[in-house]
Length: 261
Image (cartoon, rainbow, N blue to C red; front, side):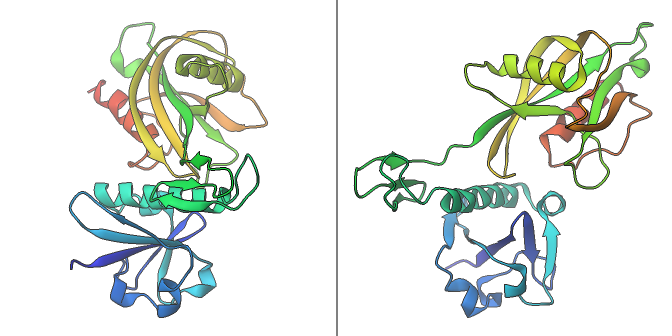
């Protein structure tokens, strides 16, 4: 049997062994492997991973605790997908223990579903759809190097980086509706030529990010003070600190930067 790796979370932080890697089964204390809610998944290559959510004081003192945003920078693409799935499933297990119809405790049905033994209703994990958009403004002189991108920093961002406008999809909205509404609500400007680019699983705590690009159409920046700390238009040669490379926001920004080369 191949090695089994453990994904050990403490809220939005991930534990690495004293070797700076995901711990193997042999490094896990017996008290950890006996936890009630341990999730096990197998990747496409047949590698097994186990995930568990634990308090920081439960772990070896020589292990390193890293926020998920930083951990994603050192994980492989495959490990990133595994970590996202385990984080989301563990969150779902914690938040969905009882039937929404009759309030009976749910039983596990499959690896990704639960069923109420009382009324028979079935449940599946459903990520919340959210959009993120790169808004660009072409320069008046037509020089690519003078084009600008809208970047903001919210009060909830860790660290000191800026990112892009983002928000959750509301009932009855199309994704494009959400893009327009969020940009207008948070920045006061209108946009045009909205187009889809890519999507990404984002486990904070359980989101499907859907990435778009759009063009500035009119209006002056007027930031929503309750959410936005600061922001503005930035040229390619004068960008603020950017989000991590694993994020969809960074992928959209990097795409825009390459177009100016």
